[in-house]
Amino acid sequence: MNNFGRPKAVDLIKTKTRIVTAGRLDMYTTGAIILTNDGTLIQELTHPKHDIEKEYYVTVRGKVSDEKLDNLKKGVTIFVDDKKYNTGKSIIKILRIFSGKE
Image 1 (tube, rainbow, N blue to C red):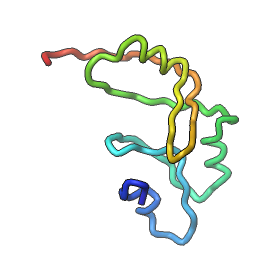
Image 2: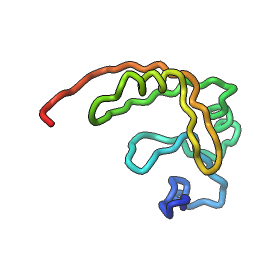
Image 3: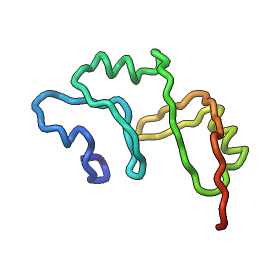
């Protein structure tokens, strides 16, 4: 269970072998994560020194201001469980803008 009492993906695997993940999904997100018992693989995929490119597709409601997009491009700091992570610079591409009545 995580800090919020929700099950983690590794909790769904019934094995005595230690399973670790590359990636994570928040509560209201979809996608894929890698589950493995290969610690070297996880290190290669997740450690910043290996500079593995990651790609995200995001749908937002409303308008994201130019200021917020600029902040994302420069990189942001994320705090998780008393740890601090810097995202680094990002390349942002707006693929489609859907509009409709609000």
